[in-house]
Length: 424
Image (cartoon, rainbow, N blue to C red):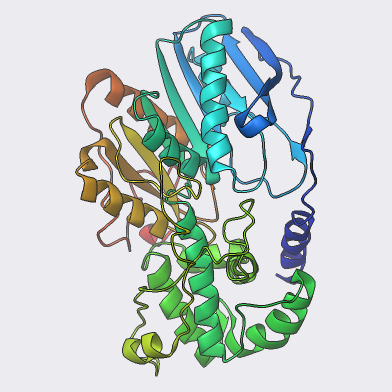
């Protein structure tokens, strides 16, 4: 556990070195058999440049799939990813394209604009696609929800996987997580003026860890903390605890709160104003642990965002979607994702339903711990069903993100783990 944490911490600390200008990694690659590769750089959003990769099967079916990558830290290297299930796409006639984006960090705005620009470049330099789909992972899910708000009909269908669907609300979650830990442990966490190494060794290791413990080894206070986190992150669901262990989420989420609670707001949108907030949040907790919800909500510290800083405006700088979607969206999320928890799916469903567009959203859950831990079979099934939906207009089945999630995902998990409760 400690070794894994130190690796995560090292990676996170490396992200603090924000180097400008950005450095583009050579996107050259070899095409798969029976396909052609194109790659290069283009001028992207807000004056930057991005790297791109394009692969076209010799027997192209006319459809193009854009890939929106996830968060890559704050390092200088801009690298275009390969799309998941790449070989399957080529074998089944789909062309694909991927942008590095013209910035790292929480680059939702750049991601949406640069991905659209690359699709338009494909149309002008290769051929006009019959249809354009978009697949995105983690922060790429927020790129999708943002794109569907700004460019509502550009894509024929979208598939976010492990998506941080509602953007800024993920950082609100990190802040709310830390303020909960602060209240229950009695150790002041936010705001802080410590550098991240001092934060961990003076606050986390010296205070939080002894006070709360860790999953499966919680103190009494830790059991209270875990109960409230259960509800904060989306309720009870398969592999919730295992996901905390896989992702070392107590460490990573407190670290993430170091950003969001210290006034930095959303990473890469550096500001002297407070962007994240827990004002108005009603914390919940199980009643048998010696701390009731009324006492918790009365005692926990509230941090307000600066006035008007969260306004949507015509461009969603913080990745807050407005809930309006007019094309099919097929979303997948692992139940045991402790870093981008299922509350992202719950919140997005509420936003979409509030606007009256619920018929355009299908959500499915996969019973597995960890962030973005999908098998190829799961992504293939989801994407295949999305294409059928676009082809036929018949909405495929999904699950109710607003309902009981304690036993979701049985139909969509391929395969079930050997330790899955359903096998016992």
